[in-house]
Each structure stands twice: as structure tokens, then as C-alpha cells.
Image (tube, rainbow, N blue to C red; front, side, top):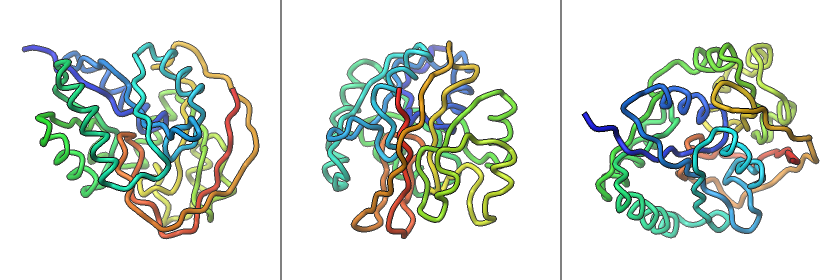
Length: 240
């Protein structure tokens, strides 16, 4: 059988990291690019707020080509879909047949991704799908990966800027998913088996950003999902 030529939708966070960890062990997957959406105005990873320079360092440490999709801040769905369609057509022309995501249980998001890919003639792969989120984060930690929380819902300010550990997960409110799969928080992975070297950074300022209204963000990044009906997120700046 021929290998499946793939793109990997890379957010830089823990779910992306663990999904890539699995995908790299599958001999039938040929990963051609790490694909990340980056907000043009700020040169930062969409939703996560991580600097483009750290994203580039991540990709270099992993050893896979990085492909950036540049977006305006909070594009409407029509604009977003048109931009993504253009890039997916380019990937298809290069012989790519599959797109890999780190989603775990959000059915509507999976359906959206599969529907948009099918319009181009591509298929989706979900290495983490259906797994228990507490078991996933425990596996992530036991594999000696390290990740820092770079943004969190306004009611989770205290965890923003902290490195994920079993103790931190134990202290989360019961309504918060251990992997933040409902959009409660996002992370930046900086050390572990898929990285050739640890990614160094220092912690900068913490800021609170508000959004005009809740909306579904279905970007190429595998960690994104429905925004909660809150006024905003806390972000911590990682400085390389």
C-alpha cells in the first residue's frame, strides 16, 4: 500500500503534540507540512496568541516544514472558508490526500472539517478521537512532554502561564475539561519526544482581551473550538 500524503494541522499545543506523536509512529502516514493559521496583524498563532518566532522554532525542533496560513483578525466564516479552500486546493495539487487534526470529541467541529475537506476531495484523520481526555493528558505528561498554558477563559486567570501537571489538572473545577477541549484554555508545547531540542522562552506580560461576541472558530489549528459565552481570555506572552 502507498503511504498517505498528509498535512498536519498544528496549533503548537498539547493536543497537536500528542496527535503528532501518534501520527509520526504510523508508517502509512507521510506528513508533508505542519499547517498553522497565523493572525496577520500580530504575527501570532490564531487563538493561542503565541509569537510566530516561537512557532517557527517549534517546527524546526520537530523537523517538519511549517506552512503558515495568514488570516485577518476574527475573519467571518465566508472569508475563512474561501482562504482555506484556496490553500487546500494547493495541497491537493501537490498530491496530498489527507489532513490530520487533534480533535477529541467535538462532533460538530469534526463534521465541519470533514465536510469542507470532502468538497476538495481530501479526507480527515483524527488520531485522538474518542479517547478519554483525562487519560490523554496523563499520557502526555507520562511521555515527558511539557506544555504551558498560554491563554485561558477569564474565570481561569490563575492557571494562565502555568505548566500543566497532574496536580494542576486535579485542581481544575469539575466543569473544565482536562484537555480544555471545550475551549477553556490553550497551550504551547516546548519539550518532549517529538522535539529535537527544548524550546526556550521567558514569560512576559499577561493581558486580558475581550471579544465582541461569541463565535465558532473552526480554524486549521487542531486545538480550536467553540468560544465560550464569556467576555474574553487571559493571555500570557511567551518571549523568545
